[in-house]
Length: 206
Image (cartoon, rainbow, N blue to C red; front, side, top):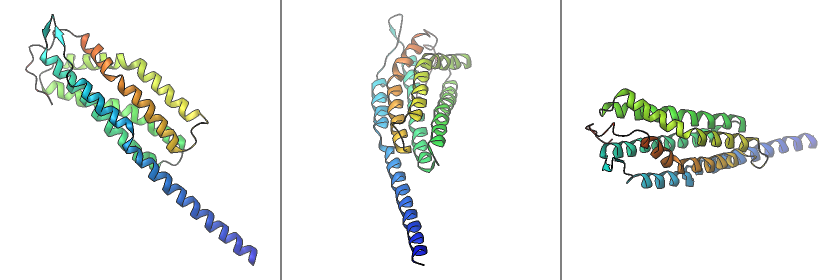
């Protein structure tokens, strides 16, 4: 009888410990909503705010404003999608599920910002082909960075250094922070590849 009671008590206490651990882990993950990655986004936004482009030494106000809008759509989407990821991560069953969520978030962020940017450009007088071209050029410049970050994410989840969902997600956000810091460089390269096409457009910022 005493053995039966001991077994029951051990089971109850074990279950309670497991519940407490999961709740603590969820709270820890949700605190990542305030990770420094989101500060990097705002710092990057400040950096691109006053970027200027010139066409034959003449200031191109349209191109300059298009660049700022383009970058802001990109940064807004990253912030929104990774905030959602953090909530989803707190509910993920295990690290395999979290890894899939991370890769899905990265892919979805590209689709969302591309669609928002394209619609905005076209509504403001940018020809369809030019809107598609500037996005294509930017994604071309981003290919190397995205490839490196995708590989880094895979390494994070394959590593023995990160055991919990929190540790994995923390490492992922650190890697994404680096990619965000390179966004202006890639954007400037893309916009520099298109000269003089936008000067006559009566463009309104977002």
